[in-house]
Amino acid sequence: MGCDHNCSSCSENCESRDLHENLHPLSSVKKVIGVISGKGGVGKSLVTSTLAVTMNRRGKKTAVLDADITGPSIPKAFNIHERAKGNDEGIYPVTTETGIDLMSINLLLENETDPVVWRGALISGTVKQFWTDVIWFNEDYMFVDMPPGTGDVALTVFQSIPLDGIIIVTSPQDLVSMIVEKAVNMAKMMNIPVLGLVENMSYFMCPNCGQKHYIYGESKIDEIAERFGTKVLARIPINPDLAKCVDEGRVEMFEGDYMAEAADYLEEIL
Image (cartoon, rainbow, N blue to C red; front, side, top):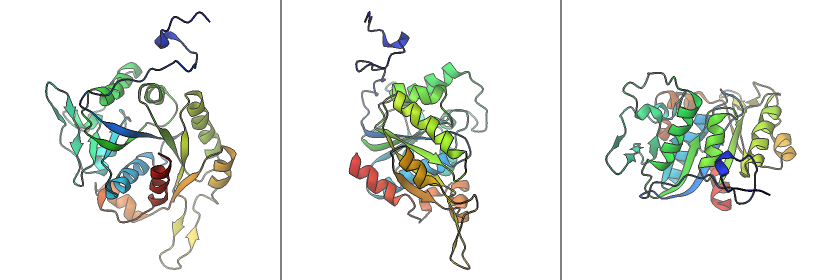
């Protein structure tokens, strides 16, 4: 009733509402998956990077859009320290050793340790430009590493980028259920499918006795997934070797297959 078709000033969630930004004319991205967490410190960037590596190993052209503007960590995980280049046509992502395309604010800063002290509108505008101004060439899968929470950037990504779904990263702690619920409810509000949950720091496998030890208590991820009608895609253990690979920028060299089941599921449903 009384619609003026100006979606930018409207809060209604109707079928005709579409705020998606257009890709660069030279870009092609087939599937876009957001990786989100309700709180910081649960390993969202680790999940994003290992998912990208897993898909890349399967012969899929893979990209990572680092939407965590104030806390970018994707370039470090892949040992990328060079600056992105561009010309009159647009900006080109930096390609990792094994062929994964990356774009992050750290690839545009003069010094990668410079803080990004920006207000929300500028941060959101930068995320949009990573989608519209970067030339993403023939990507099969793009993973969007989002900052924690359900604030400006999450809203910008949900509205501006045509996501095929989101993956929610959790940890095995009692407060996780509430945090997952916030992310699920936001996705529902924005009509974004929740593809599943990934539990990081799920357990520790003792190298001496070979038994699992639940450092943060018994996992409740199955009950949480059932409650929200979604699927557990992966349980990532506390693994010092994986942490070391990420810290040293060698995530592409890690030989574990913790994300194999998640990759199988994404290929099946998408």
